[in-house]
Image (cartoon, rainbow, N blue to C red):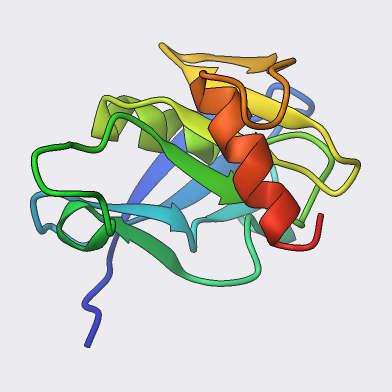
Amino acid sequence: MLNVHYDYVVVADPAGSGFLVYALGSTKKPGQFVLGGHIRVSVSADGGRVERIDPLSRTLLIEDEKYTGLPKGTHLVGMYYNQIVSKKPVETLIYTSNVSKRPILVGTPDGKVWKIADGAISIDRSRPGSDTMGGAARKAFQHCGR
């Protein structure tokens, strides 16, 4: 059974006069990282009204270092995630990349692959199967029917 805890972060809304409230999931277990399951809520400037609720994924998804299926003697150096809620990676993936101290490769509905690392988001232009993290992610996304 998964025991997900939510921390709440309030920031000024850069696109409006109100606030954004993020519900950021975590399991509090070392080596587990919540990739999907975070929520963003837009709140009015006076704090009295919810203007919009955005689920930033369609499912709860937890990466667990113990169950990566990696061969013995290897270790996790990054993660990949197929995102279907938008054509650009959601901002909470920067948070997850920073917490996990690992890059995240994100596939979006338009077929692009994005790399999230060191607090930045960029398009990854690696070829499928190339000897890069982006190439491995692209190859995995092809097997998912993308």
